[in-house]
Image (tube, rainbow over all chains, first blue to last red; front, top):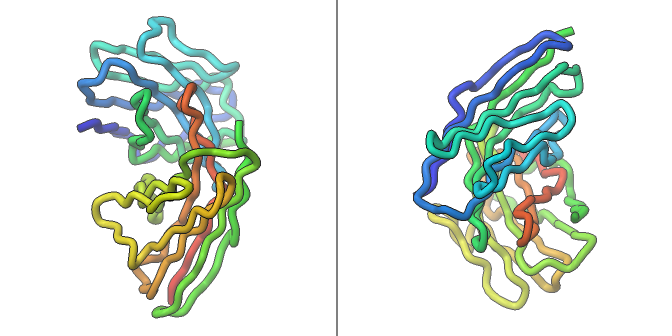
Length: 114
Length: 114
């Protein structure tokens, strides 16, 4: 069975600083995707970044980047130049291509401090 | 991409009553998903709704408690029946892109049972 673990329930970071959120997962599948989703206090869940497991290059989206270590089954999210609008709950998620099930981690609540 | 409209956004209900949550998608989708998110916790899949067939429920969730309708490819409802305070949660509907795996979410329904 697939599992996703986020070991940091809460984190805080000063505005303009960099923060890294951790995520580990366990699977025997080979064709899968990993995601980070953001859920702001307004509650609408939105995609932050996506990583295909077969790609060795780490995904980057503006201030957001991942460190994907496939052998270690680790998928951390780095937020650079943190902004107040980054305050949200962040969920790491796992999806096997061809299935319909997502496995979500328990989330990390990030607070960006002014 | 998909835009999902979910309503109501919140409700306070008396125990023993039922609430029906509606989810409208701006494009035709095969599968729609219903999640429960208990306060401060991750998302738990309740069921998968396919058009023209019975919904598929996850372990711990039953049709009598959470009946689902899927009358067409753009709409679904989830009913929370015979509510108790333990049903107080956020309920989210979702669809997923089959090629990219990206999931799209409604705004969520915050349910409080008193």
